[in-house]
Length: 221
Image 1 (cartoon, rainbow, N blue to C red):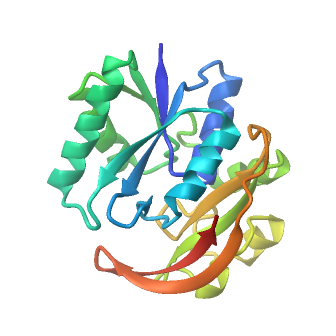
Image 2: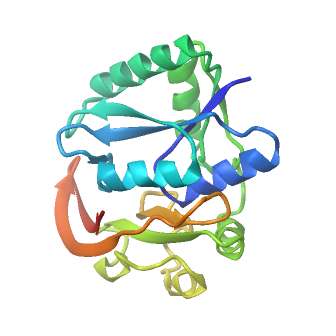
């Protein structure tokens, strides 16, 4: 089996990588969807240069799926398929995902990737999200909040480090891992990292994306 990890740069991806490695399923590559026009991780808003530095710190090759600024579902699926075909040519047979409990998303991924003959694996599926975050922090991973959905979480959380105080401060209505899209993160150090990813915290800016409002904390390389 040769697998790649669907990599967002955030905590769920990092914990998925960690758990997969423990289970003997260490992926051979990271694959990240990038806004090709802006050069940033799709939805998370992290600069390509910072993403590349992160992959270097982990020591795995990075492949990117280049998307338009606000892709239609058709455009998204075409680019995913193009990426899958290139990876299959290099012997990849499986894709790992850090999804936790969104059944419709899991089934969508399975249908999408199976079209290209790629089998999907979900090492974190149905894991308790509070327990996951405690384990993530306790294992020594370090992550910063880079995006929050303005309708679900206050702007003040944008740019915060994920720690036990962060978990205590989250409103009860927010999933601890942000699995409903409440927030997104960027992991900059941890047990799988050969060295920390250094960056400077830039401005927090507000943008509308795909019809919703978000606050983004820029990470400067």
